[in-house]
Image (cartoon, rainbow, N blue to C red; front, side):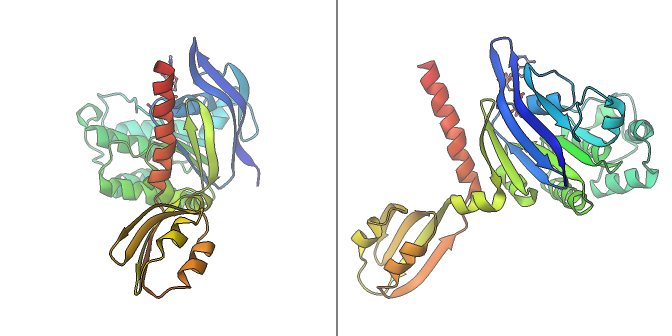
Length: 304
Ligand SMILES: Nc1ncnc2c1ncn2[C@@H]1O[C@H](COP(=O)(O)OP(=O)(O)OP(=O)(O)O)[C@@H](O)[C@H]1O
């Protein structure tokens, strides 16, 4: 399977402001890719270059192996795009707006619009201008998904959605993947990306700082352990393990963080009687906060 998205040394500057720096990234056909980063990291800039809404300063972006500037009309039929800020005519009714957009795309039966609106609990008879932010976002989602495009590019897709609609959105992404569609979604919320993405890229200050599968990121992140011993605790043996940090002992229970594999820990524990052991799922949110905090720290240094 080929790459649906290819970014090669993509750089975008806004005057003296840095948007993106030397970004290399590819997304394979059929993949769900989560593009994470804090506000201002460069997520929307990447998406706007992909859709040829802005031009790169240097480097290039390819969609389906082609320059997005060429064959733009044909390309846009194969792409479903949800913008960060959904811009639609406020005087239109929802159904009118969606059937108009469906007409531009071709190949979208009215039943598909009804199905998506029903699942997202979107009132097709409402005037767009009277919709709440969350309901406007649903209009954006329906128009992105309705023609079953080969590639979905979604900028902060769950922004403003209630938890139920967020779940419906995740179901739509899973269905898209099952149908072989490719999904590129930006977010600053790890948990929603973790629920559906195959791979995740983290962008910070216009640079890609992490790129891996969700499974491997989870392996690399820290586990929290609670071990309750039947006999005395061998604190020094635990503290000596290079993978163990933040060790605290409270009565018969030792609490600590474990980075990497538990192999050496298990060897140490096997020398003692262990009454209970609990390891909590690695918290990817924490991993991301580490990157975000690095972002804040570097900003403080720059401003100092
Ligand atoms: N039109 C513009 N003119 C000047 N600077 C811009 C412009 N658009 C974006 N930037 C700057 O480029 C950087 C990246 O912005 P971008 O909107 O791509 O980030 P983002 O990751 O999408 O953030 P958010 O989650 O806040 O939308 C920011 O520093 C932003 O201020």
